[in-house]
Image (tube, rainbow, N blue to C red):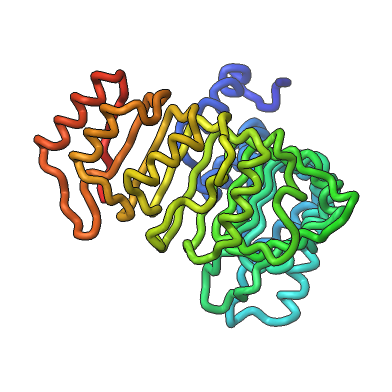
Length: 367
């Protein structure tokens, strides 16, 4: 870097500033104060301030847009953005309209974005704002969060995925969708996303199929969270597992219907999966045996929540058997549910010793 500051030891100061900024978390107001120290501080602080800003109100979005209108050279510093404005009762319609216009301006003027998060009011019809991106081919991380952060926030969060959007966001590698309705518009020309990491958190599919949206060859990590009441989620997950090379799967339900894991392919074997995390699901020896048959290469198994109905004696029998032959790491609840009973230290120590006999690392999670 060239010398941007004056004084007897400019190079020494210039080298120290990035180290100081990396020492801990700095609030934006603190960084703004540091930027006034000298031109050298301003250079580094700007890079920190504008790298990945978070804007949670329409006012902040308008101020942000005004900054770029005054100095467009700052646009090159922004690599990621988190836009989650939420209307409040005191917001006037004119301010809201200006805020929306400024948001579209910001998305259009920042041509170096690689990470984009949309939340708040922007999660409603999120595709409208994604189409405003000036250089969507560069975006490799996208997170749309429709979680209602306030009572006034509309509960109609949605994303319409069509052929146009699929071509624009062809470089996506990580996609997180939360608390929204996903509408996959059927099309014979719909490009398959080469996403490696996919998170679906309370996502309701209103049209289409996930296998029509994602390339099953590139998908490696999959996380699904649902209320446990929507069979459509399990059916879609089953289709993905049957045709993909997923290596890591996290599956969480909020309400256990005391049934087997419906997402597992009924007759197929998913040999690529080596890590499985189950939260809140019904778990008994029969289900565990089905897991071993469906995922024969499983090395890491994490089980938590109050859906576990396996006693210490049953776990001892399982650990002595040939079930899950490749298992290397196992995390299980420290008790049995319905009725709940926490295991004592003697029962846990027996299981730990039995695990050690098969070179298995065993630990316990609290219910």
